[in-house]
Image (cartoon, rainbow, N blue to C red; front, side, top):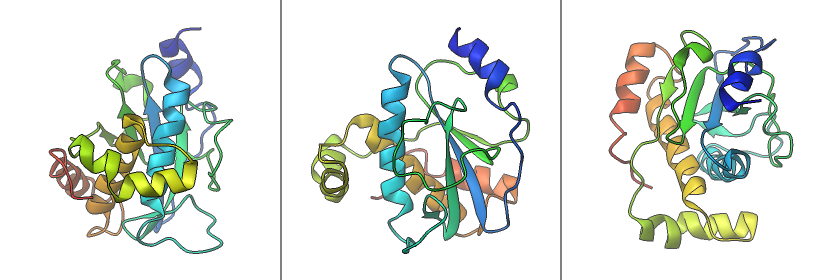
Amino acid sequence: MSFKCFLSGAIFAGLASSAAAHEFTAGLLVTGSDAVPRLTEVVNGFLLAADERDGHANETSDGHLGGVDVQILPLPHGSGAGLTGLSGNPSQRPDVVVIFGDEPVQHAMLPPGVPIVRPGTLPPDTVWQQGNFADRYRAAYGRAPTRDAASGYNEARRLDHAIRPLDGLSPTDAFQTSIKATSGGTEW
């Protein structure tokens, strides 16, 4: 079955929207070759950022971004079956989708009205390969971070910057403006 057929036929079948005021679900979609192993790296990087500022013991979410609980939903639905470290509810409808990769995704395949985010600019390689992020990644996962891990971390940081002043994803126009402001890069 092709990626596009799978995505259009099954990605959001039966997903229910249940985002609470202080919670949101971030769908993470990796396109192109080796999507599933790359998704693992994206999620690992995303999790590091989601635990960075507002994390606490006994969380029922996958962490916090912008002071708000975040649930991570690997996409297409079911692609994260082998992922570890996720404690949230991956069956929810995403409130925002971050697309990693260059393969085109038709917006008609995504839930209507959900903001779509494309990755912003990563800091120089030396920052993510040798800095604090790399040290934390090695400590958590026992290996050096990949570009996909750095990209997942970067996008979580961008979401944190966009959501924090809004205390969520709305108003949508303000969120879109805020997330676009970090597309050229953000400080790690």
